[in-house]
Length: 250
Image (cartoon, rainbow, N blue to C red):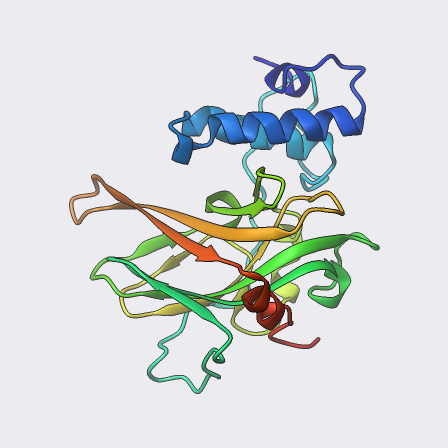
């Protein structure tokens, strides 16, 4: 099995800057939306997260890759984070929000905050960790349950032309978010909604996010792969300014 360094085409002596540079290059080259292999894409993301320390520390996988990889840690949430938007009294996204509707989802980007301290969002994350964070309201408008996974399927496209994936850095602390907000992969039933937080991987300090994309790979009623849907949000300067706010306070 390839080591994390081999996946990124690096020697074990590569420093963090080389790891980040290789990751950005390979991510863009192998992204499924650009015709790349999803399996290779996920392996690149996994290698990067392990090398820069974003993988939860309970994961015993080593850089050499010799030991069997354990299952991803699961973090129970207090209750089902989805809800019936027609029956629950929730604030509607403001006029600054962006909404894109597809065949299966109605996806609203209600906030996009760059370089915010994660300590302001959820207890327990490493101190002095600043990230770009997107806040979504996800509504299943189809007739079958869908799987939402923001960390794996959301992408942040910077003005440097690179694509940055979501991060699982807050997953071990999922139960510490305010009620209904979720960072976890979640199944959303027909007609139900989810308030989702997606934290980006680390962006260079001088990069501004210009687009956010969510890619939904669904299945039909027989469980077969259905057509992929892409939900693209264009963040022009005025829009970006309006979305630059947190939708809740801790």
